Image (cartoon, rainbow, N blue to C red; front, side, top):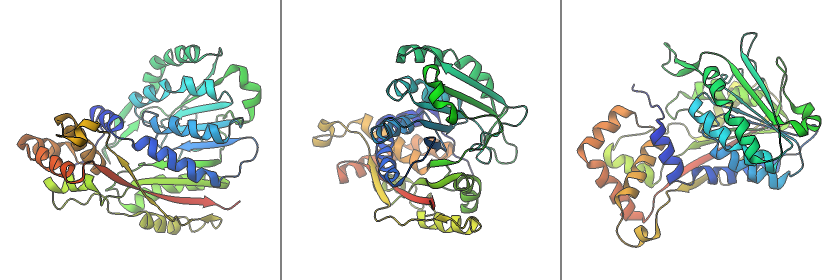
Length: 360
């Protein structure tokens, strides 16, 4: 089977052309109201930081809820391009919420929660000086050259997926808040348990369900603290976005496992973790939408919006580049996309949320 890989252009257009990151951040913040925190503070694990758009939007919402609570935020990301963009979003977060330790790592899921880089891994701890976002931004930018060496990747001969050359961890916090943050600053060889773990689009839709749970969700669930919550988000289909896909590939079925299927498999694999529960949700399905100009909704649909909708639809459905190039060589994709946009007046996609919780 051909593999789907994120391209920078497709990902950037998707993030900027839809409100997915904002909508997911809102929904995660709502579910996080379930949490009851204890000392030394709020501990968050993000299973896929990407460019940091989702994480920093969530940080803003959580700051409103836990304004003066110290945080530890650990984010996993293997792409150095995403690491740079994610870090570039942090200076304002350090200004608004100074009681915060942020960690970025390229470790695999089995090792990432405990930041297990091993004896030869690269561990950088940086205490940011100053009190302004400009100062924080300058010091973070100065790290990019070092991080490019730390975040080198190669391709797995077995799976074809990118893997790290060097296990790496970067720890950031404000120097003037170190005394308060000392209990949350991770130590090499330590162990961390999390109050909130986020697994938003953390695996490929077509990945076998045993691997989705075994390689991604199970390690995160085992890393939950008492009362901790794992929030999973995945694409659900059955929306105008999939109608666009079916206009070109009528038999395409990228979303083969529902949230209920994933939770059932998680229950099987985590049977030994007797204090884990799987709360039901009244409304697990929610939607995000394509940004369109009001003039385009009221009158003709511009080509730029059609291209943005097509890109988002194929990105969500994880269409591989070979089939994508073939479809775009014929022009059929424009007709299929425009037909759906004219039918609904807009384009939206359905996401599905599920929970795994450790009993207090």
